[in-house]
Image (tube, rainbow, N blue to C red):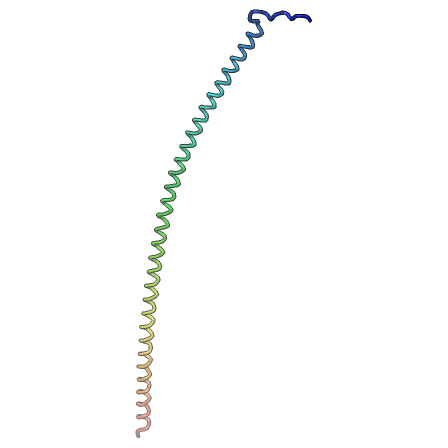
Amino acid sequence: MAKRPPPPSGPNPRSRNLGVLIEALRSDVQQVAEGHQQLAVKIDGVRTELKADLHEKFTTLATAMTAIRDELRADVQALRTELHETRDSLRADMQTLRTELHETRDDLRQEIRATREEVRTHTHTP
């Protein structure tokens, strides 16, 4: 068996270049990792701001919608009350008109009877 010669005992130029490349690559990977971390922090900050902004807008909108709903309910109730009052007033007016119409009719009947009697008395008397 033949023996291999022992490896050279000092750094060779290829090893040094490889070491420099590996160190540069480590530095680049570290910069990318730090940049990624900074982006993650910024994204979380933007997400938090957007959530807070949306929550505020939603709360404002919900409050406004509740106020509008309450106003509409009050308006509907007021209209119902007014409608019932108007209906009751119309019913009372109609009843008054019926009564007056019946009274007028009865008065006219009496006048017609009286006029007929007068005509009969004048036409039968010589």
